[in-house]
Amino acid sequence: MPKLSDRVESFTDSVIRRMTRISDEYGAINLSQGFPDFDPPKELLDALAKAAYAGPHQYSITFGAQNLREALAGKISKTLGRAVDPDTELCVTCGSTEAMMAAMMTICNPGDKVMVFSPFYENYGADAILSGAEPIYIPLVPPEYGFDLQLIENGFRQGAKAIILCNPSNPCGKVFTREELTAIGALALQYDAFVVTDEVYEHMVYAPNVHTAMASLPGMFDHTLTCNSLSKTFSITGWRLGYVCGPAWAIEGAKKVHDFLTVGAAAPLQEAAVAGLGLPETYYEELLKTYTQKRNYFLEGLDRIGLKHNVPQGTYFVMLDIEAFLELPRFSGFTDLEFCEWMIKSIGVAAVPGSSFFREPVNHLIRLHFARQQSTLEEALRRLEKMAAMLTSVQ
Ligand SMILES: Cc1ncc(COP(=O)(O)O)c(C=O)c1O
Image (cartoon, rainbow, N blue to C red; front, top):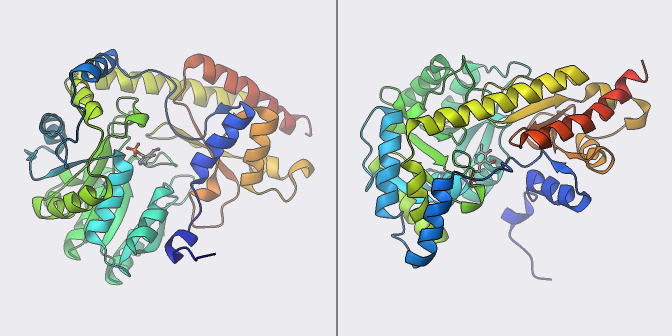
């Protein structure tokens, strides 16, 4: 057999997306892969129906349709407190997934070091391998998910070209404070490095926490490639629309990578998405209210049935501590992956094993999400209650 590249041999398929496939196979409630089970706003659906007949159906401008870039630039300008040029400082991509890959390919030469927090969204591992970068992992230490700034300075001293920052952070729900971002940003400026941010959960930040965009801090726009997406904000993960925003000279590079990776995002979907960006501020307030209710309901439910968990400051993920289960003879020697497979088959709820997010050998955490309709969350909690009963029945 001819040999495949070392590149593809050096990482596995996504564990998150694999859990979805197993969940579907067994008909479980899928709280693994993060996507909502409710509809996008009607305005987007109407605009999509219209685009089906009126078009466009041919390639859009490779770096994004003009009207979508203008609409995005309007929104991002408000977030960053500075006018963003839709022609030069923005490139529309196929989701934040492509935006991250394009950003990494734009700034990294093979062998360049890049800092990645651990736990991290699993795409970043593959992004580093595909772009030839060597990750330096900076632990976010549970349960508070704090970090040691000195380790970041050490990373920059070793020549790290960039730090990847997921804010709010998947999987641990950490929202970086303004002070933390200022400190990281100051180091990036001092060492003339980049910050690549992934801010897809910017609208899911729970009071009293607030989202601060790294690129909005003084001096940071020129050192930040902000990757973001419409997937979560408008409940359209299947539309594959995102963007990378940054200084014109860097975006020029990202546009070239994007052009040859994908040519462009789907033209009719870009057209329809413009309607979403035209929604008033109240849309984002309602979205946050909805997710706040879901978070409170789900976390209170976990407390009631006695399952130990973290309290996410943002995102729609929660980490469950399964240590007590792994101490039961029934689960002796289980990995977190085996535990998740057992959960799907025996409890009917799908989660993601925490080990797929951590560099460190962590086996006692699994990730669930609550981007589900109320009735689905109710049923999931009923099923999880049966699981929790295994703990009380042995006491
Ligand atoms: C942190 C993070 N970044 C990016 C993505 C993917 O975003 P997109 O659908 O825009 O590619 C996800 C999806 O779960 C995510 O959690």
